[in-house]
Length: 148
Ligand SMILES: [Zn+2]
Image (cartoon, rainbow, N blue to C red):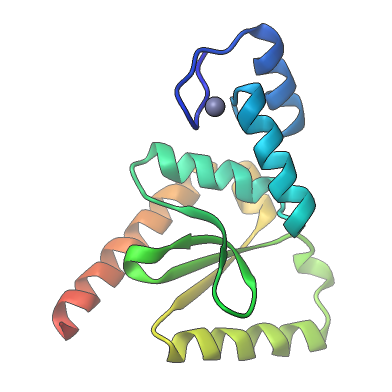
């Protein structure tokens, strides 16, 4: 068993502790670091799981990336893709919805693409989610090439 972040070998306790609390194999140092990130930003646990799944797939994701106004759950800077995880999708208010749309418009104007993923999708379809994001990255990369 190895830490998904630093590849360090981890023991049974470290493995159990990180799997129980985060659902990702991490050493005790990285479990602590990620818990700190969650405390500071209110990061959904599914964002952590998606972050490491993307990393494993060879994508270079950034966790809780500051875009100048707010912290984005996951960012893929190379193609200016922002990924937000929605935890209370069913309970979204109309205020929240128009805020989300406005933020999407602002980031789009700055050349960023924002996608919102309901947390349950990550919970039940993690690999499919990663595959789709990889497809989006490829599409964005093709567009960048055409413009540039
Ligand atoms: Zn580690």
